[in-house]
Length: 194
Image 1 (tube, rainbow, N blue to C red):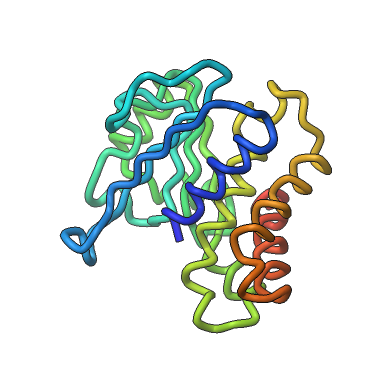
Image 2 (image 1 turned 30 degrees about the horizontal axis):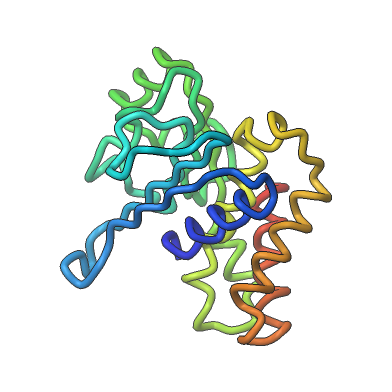
């Protein structure tokens, strides 16, 4: 669901703000079973770079074990935002789940850490069991807009933002039926709220 989430976020930013976007998914048959990566750039100015990014404002990790196979904070700017999948119920438990070397990076760079249980949200909201795993990524779209400074910088109200996301979900999933759209809308809203 991470690639689909990235595409939806890109189109929402384009539709809502008229910004330039570049989306670079890194996946395919050669990565079966391996972590996938999705790079998204959004800017009011033209984007001239087409490559993997080395400096980021926000990093989303739907993988709760991300620190066991990569440095998810590499390139995250000072004061950046990191959102991670976690079933932990308290901030202290989330913090303790992050290995000490990465805790140091977070402290030294003033990174804002947010945790969301996208798996739980998708399980509770998806009426189709086949979609439960894939829909966890869409919770991260809601979390992104709640935690990143983008919506505030663009002067977007929560209502306008959620309307734009609903429109994008209707465009993307409308052919699959109203139930699938409504499931996704509820997951995004919970991701935003939680």
